[in-house]
Image (tube, rainbow, N blue to C red):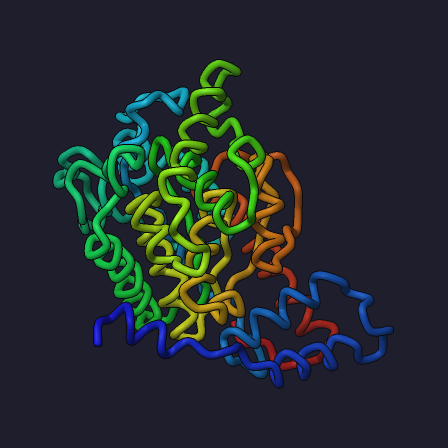
Length: 348
């Protein structure tokens, strides 16, 4: 049995008894529901991580990078080289929004090259797991990646999470970097949420009206080309239209669920990853917490398909785990408040 298959088999529903017990503790001395979504966050976190007396989360931010063959068609306002520059930015000057927000919420930041179309071997601190050296194929010409490469990239994410769980991390913030990736997300969201190409396709990197029409046509053509893949086939959809960085983050979600850890998703792209993980094993959603509502117009539909709801709407369209970092700090606050109001012993 492969790592992918064995991980899927290990995923079970989160602990509902713990969830109920935490809810009862919140309501001591106050009407049930007084703390609203703060209580919901702690119930979810405690049940996912199997903690009757939840300790402060130990968060790890994982950003996966990979290039998309479809970017060459002109679906983004930026050239493909930006994937290289941003990946380096996380680790050398450390000046990206993701770095600032990881510091803000106390997360350790880790960056994985799963398929950047450049030699990244000299970048210090980068985790080198390049599955396809030139990124994915152009999805309109052929599947974005062969099935075996999709599984290999998923297993990169699973193995990475298992290492981090052994180090004591129990909460994972997921982010992505790859020019052209909102095009993949639009196709994935359309497939799983039953949207048209126009409904699923947003402006991504704030593209012009003219470029938006190109992007919508690409999404439409991809939906036609892969119309025979059913929405129950997560791996098939990932292979056909996904990104290598998406596959890695799908692996992070699966690995976290199998190891009773929480995943905080970010915006449109990581929600697309969650849609794929959900198709592979619906119980993964017991371990996934939404964060913010992206500026991408189909993000709300994608979350609804998963049965999730954003906690805040900040108009963000950054990706890179930035909204997830803000949610992480709210979760930190919620856990602290739980111990104050419920009188439990607080373990830092």
